[in-house]
Image 1: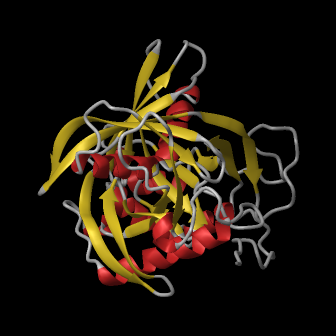
Image 2: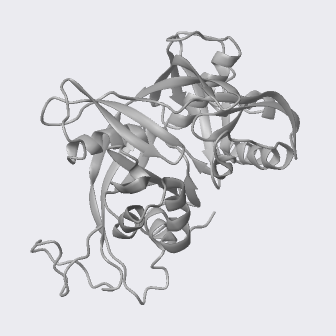
Length: 365
């Protein structure tokens, strides 16, 4: 993020920015989507770079942004600049936060900050190459090292020497089955059985059929309400543990599936409802990671068996496969490869007027 010069001219651009508060620098973003799920990339936020240079780890930086710069998240994610499904990423370079990676990233959504986001990693892999964040890109494919709040993730991006391409794939942090066949009581739905998987963040998984719904044909509002009820019930009835940090020991959302967990060449469909009833338009990269880990744990798939996952909202597709076994704390885990397509949709410059009562955004349901 760079501040435009006084008088309304910014970064040498002869076009005038609209009247704005000089205390609030203009916010410059790169707009992308992966499988229909938006990603608003903030290439630079000076306050976060300064904090990273001072030695903050990425998890500490995440807490620092929530405490000191949360108005930036709200301004960019919420209306009138954003919308109920907006998702974002703040890029951080250097310092302890990046820990030697090409870039570190803080993930933003309408109600806070997440630990991992697969659709964002796929998009950021392209962004890192096209915006010169990788020192020596290689043809025909470049490995882009990202530091996410959940840990190191590597994206593999096609590169022709001039621009990035698709499909992009990434290798996850170790993913594992946290619990399987857990009975949970859901108000209005009775008792259901869920699996809880970790793919950089924790999700509850169950077939929509258990809730009297069809992930392919039920109304989205009904799926969202039911999934959110599952998330709240799991929070109350199941204690999570993360092997490295209690900051990451939380249920991020619920993924309702078509129940087709056994290996098949045919796509399996799901919908992810995360945070505060936010709906992922993509098949959900971290969700695919966790679901592959669960299927591997149950013996339903083998190493390097690829499955295709379809979003019930857009029909977009990701593929996923377990590529190697790992250990993560006390858990038997797998590293999962997820592949999908990410695209640019534009760039934007956002401004704030100090007297605007809604300058830092609003939301409603």
